[in-house]
Image (cartoon, rainbow, N blue to C red):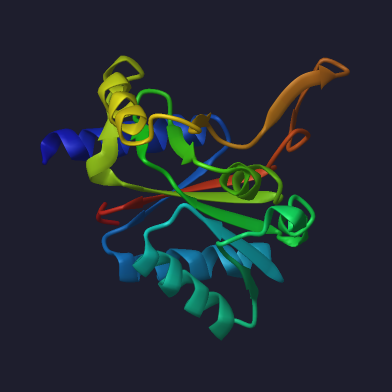
Length: 192
């Protein structure tokens, strides 16, 4: 338990150091409380969901509907992509693990929809369970091995560390040029 708490602290510090915003949710029900705060700040009209456990996806979809927010969720028809996801202001995805040392979320995509949901909307929210945090990039190798053993083909793993950034424009760091300009991480299982 002490190691998990250390990983939560490390992840939070590292994620916020790269302009992300980390939140803690002790339970799946508490995820809605965090999302309500984010929705109040971001004012989305459309939210896209992907790669979330079925019960959490249903819970978040219900919250969005209660708030009058249109919900996009799997299965996505490939003929509608990426245009459909482009209508969303927020994308919410489940992440298979997080790396405390770097404040990185690891997202597994078995199709293009997952990657689009985390990269096209101006705001991305990644949800990771605290039990799935690892200390370092080196320690993530066993988690990656499990991903590739479970899905031997057609899988993409993306490492997401805060908002998109580039220094190509007049040599000035700019957020949100090639992806989300705002990034949130919800650490599920962490006490506030």
